[in-house]
Amino acid sequence: MAEYRTVRMSFWHDPYIEELDTKAKLLYLYLFTCPYANNLGIVEATRRKIAYETALTTAEVDKYLDAFQKAGKVVYDPDHNLIFLANFIRHQTTTSPKMIEGLAKLTVSIPSPIIAKAVCIRYPMVYGFEEYPIDTVSIPYANGMYTVAIPSAEFGSWKREVGKGKVEEGRGKRARPPDTPTVKLPHGENGNVKLTAEELEKLRTRYGPEATDKAITFLDLHIGAKGRDEYRSHYHALQKWVFDAVKEREGKQARASPQVKSFAELEVEKNKREARRLAGIV
Image (cartoon, rainbow, N blue to C red):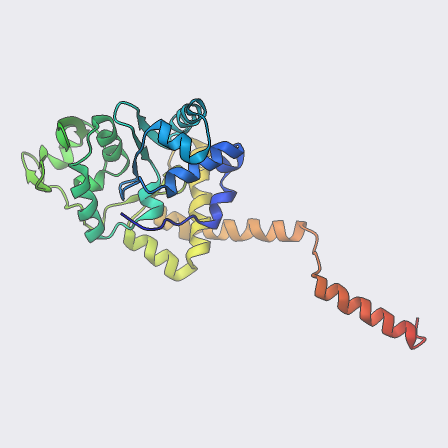
């Protein structure tokens, strides 16, 4: 269990967060930073415990969890007291082969089929798939097997041995292993931008982490607003026009904003005026 979690400064600029009231923001932050979340982003805590530690009522906890779930931020299974945070892995862990292997081992201890399916849909690479999709296959959770869909045309039939963390090959074409560098992970608050770990690292090296995060956020909102994804490669789209678009927008905002002088600059100007007055210049 991790001893700390990180909250990016851009968290407070997220349009979804800006629309939340004070209590909703508190609960949202609590879910990400409480000690009951594992590396899959699954929080195991009762409504009563959450209410006690946040000073909210259980009714308020229910209301906000329902709102988070409708917004696609969490998946809540009250029967097992489990809450899956949809964006947790993307913000709080890495997607290195070693980490993916560790996350895969955690999946066999998930007691809820609802949560197991949610994890597979959001992060299929943890189960050894590239995407979530069509034919059925069994995936494990703590109390048995749960049937979900995977693309048989591309992967064939696959199953995971419970407790062993292995993926056995069945019929059809061979699937890529979960630690393959070509697995594309969702990025952006809505998960609309798909990049491999290698592509993300190249962008951050070339443009810097902050500029890359801004560009991903821009493209994520752009795709969401259009309601469709017309790009074959988000990696190339980002480089072709998104970074330039973000830079151009920030330039316009800077030109439109009044230049506010610092206190030190104002003091310097004040002293210069006083000196000219004493010298009889003014």
